[in-house]
Length: 257
Ligand SMILES: C[S@@+](CC[C@H](N)C(=O)[O-])C[C@H]1O[C@@H](n2cnc3c(N)ncnc32)[C@H](O)[C@@H]1O
Image (cartoon, rainbow, N blue to C red; front, side):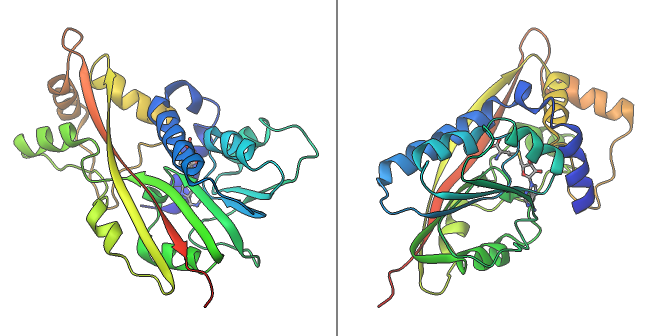
């Protein structure tokens, strides 16, 4: 994956993203429900990574309106869309930032992110870094994608002996096995299926939200071969069902002893 390519494709999709992002909406709701269930008190400094157009930002801000917020994204265009959801003069700073290399000097009570970390080059290294930005009892709460995501695509391409091009996503047990000094880690897996008119509509939806960047080194299929695979994925009559595996959980910094 090339980071400037990721930035560019999300930037281009910033104005169409909301039209084709029901799963991202669903994941943001799931994350909000999880945070509400924690009944957190004394949340003063908060950071969001990969805000996109602001599905999560708007909802999570409403939970902690008195906190200081730093809301960030790799793409300036996405950040602008998010900014437009908030009235001017709120206690929020917006900043273009690569969440893998946070340029912040603060520590946070809450760091949140929904469906952005699957774009990181080095997930465990980045989580380690972010966990070090947590105050005692601070939490890094996020969703990311798990390995059953687009399993229908993977199985079909494998059956036809075609290169798959999907990213490698960590399993929930892999995430739970991560060890960060002074922190505990707790993740669960959630499956969501989404129906599309056919295989072409699925691919178009990915493009509309800017999520079509394949694994690095992937050599795209010829137009004819891709058309054949998309037809096999689902037609007008039967539709195309796609699975998304959402991993949800938190890394919590223990209280200082
Ligand atoms: C699928 S969208 C999710 C957006 C939003 N959180 C939501 O729930 O709808 C992924 C977002 O992550 C951003 N992103 C990708 N890589 C990033 C990185 N390394 N640091 C910060 N943001 C990143 C993209 O620009 C895009 O806005």
